[in-house]
Image (cartoon, rainbow, N blue to C red; front, side):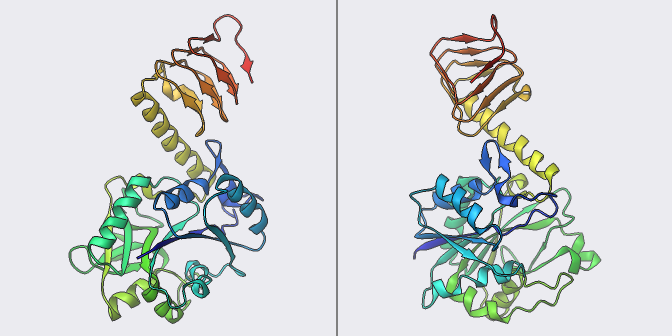
Amino acid sequence: MDIYAAILAGGRSKRMNSTISKVLHPLLGKPLVFFPLKVACSLRPAGIFVIVSPDTHQEVAARVREMFPDEPIEFVVQPEPRGTGDAVMQLAPYFKDKDVDLLVMPGDAPLLREDTAKLMYRFHKENDARITILTAEVPDPTGYGRIVRSHGDRVLMIVEEKDAFPEEKEIREINSGIYLFRTGDLFSFLPEIKPQNAQGEYYLTDVIEIVQRKRGGVLAFKIADWKETLGVNTRPQLIQAQKILKQRLVDRWIREGVSFIDPDLVYLEYDVVLEKDATIYPFVSLIGQTHVGRGATVGPGVKLVNARVPDGAVLGFESGGDHG
């Protein structure tokens, strides 16, 4: 069975207080939407749909095509912001008479790891699930939809925060907003959902209760690292995501044989390459496609933008300053 992916990228940055599309806000030198798209691409889908709003369509499409020129990506416009269920419903014409798997991810969820997505997909297939929901137990579930289980991995329903009873708000297992669906079930039952909730929107989560009641096979795939489920709706959350992603980059380069004197005081972006035995001092900024050669040392206060540092070079101890 083929797999497809859908990225919900119609956010309008209201809580970011920004005129820039939320999914285009920069995160370690990449727009936010780059990260869920990269996860989707790791599953080698037959097609990827990016669902956008009319006012952000052109700018989002231009950036995505620039980053993923060779991927089978199609842009679908959601005419009105009527919720996640309505957004996914825009894909119904593409899946007529198809029963395939569809990964659905928010465009503002940059922390899911590719390996986690692959494990989730394996779980989905091995358990012959109709719907698989990525979940996690979080320290503070406020604001998240809660997972109401029946037994084992089986899910009864998801209750949104604003519609939850007090006892349901005590549940700490939350919905990440990341799903795998069988499209036959998804598009059979999506027309049945109604905007009977505090937001007046069509919740994608409502289809889960319908499928569970009528067909069964709705499962939770709970992960240990709850931080992978974090989304970005505000600027403080963007900063939090950047800290987590930067630490992952630092950990990766340390495993590759790079030394950081104080990694907390270094800024580096996603496309930076560091060779073995490079040493990075505090207050260094490594930006764009900077490449630091084997055994090179970048001293305190140096800023490198799309720079290439030769093997064994030493920067920043005599001259200091910027190196573009």
